[in-house]
Length: 390
Ligand code: GDP
Image 1: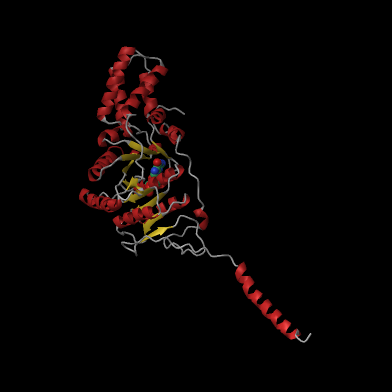
Image 2: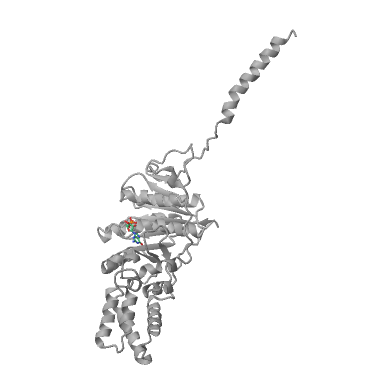
């Protein structure tokens, strides 16, 4: 027992060491997820807003003051069948094209006045003069040859003729295949979204991100509409909801081309499938627009080709919208049209007019303000919607 004090000292040292060690071991581990870095050309201006829920070690995104709960990731609705699900919204507005035409065509003996009324109805629905005359001529011919009066037959005839006008042969698929680079590696597809402010451009980019997520693709968003302060916030929120990152700038009026470039670069770094670039659509004059969009396109295509340039058009703007669409198509090579707000208008005929005017297909349609109310365009479902199918 001579060594009792030695044992006592050892016991004190051991207990002390344990006391120091246990609190540290019980503390939760910090996840040291580095903030994503992108800003190479202009480090001060561009940041990536992480789409994943925040961890302790992540710095607060400077421009986002959303509650953490909003970062919960949603599962978007499947893309297939969306047009059928939403088609009834086409017939809900004021005086739907299809039902008005059916009513006139079902009259017993169609007079010249009746045919004029049909043509007028088509023009009011923004079908466009040439397509409207073509349709009337074909209907007249059919009615003369077949002498139809049975409502079901009339409907079938009109359906057939409208489908022909909308043109089911157009390729409406989005070119989203990754590009093979010189070194054999794959680069993300790049999609630029252009159009006049207010048409629903940013909303469409957000909805399109959801379409891509639903189709199991990994997109990156580029908020290159740097002129509207709210646009990048808006886009970031869309992205966060489905776990998609947004490359944006803190500075209002920052160089949109630089943001677009950073977004493409981020897409390469992350091996993303698609980079979606929102742009500003200030129609101050054609030269200014050409400068701006031309620069974005040039800079964004430094690392590879731009796969799609989608023009967003508000279906409620009629002829005015068509004139704007023409200006855009002269400035950039538009590869597809997105028609928004088709739910709130009786002017569904604009699908036909814009395709004729620009020579490019309508690829997507917006049929409401809901997050999944953007549908890949399907000719049959569209015409059925016009004709009032449920
Ligand atoms: P931007 O200025 O072109 O980016 O336009 P926004 O994306 O901010 O959209 C303008 C408004 O249009 C918003 O209130 C959207 O909710 C609305 N919007 C966009 N697409 C549709 C659609 O398909 N249907 C309806 N009813 N509203 C839409």
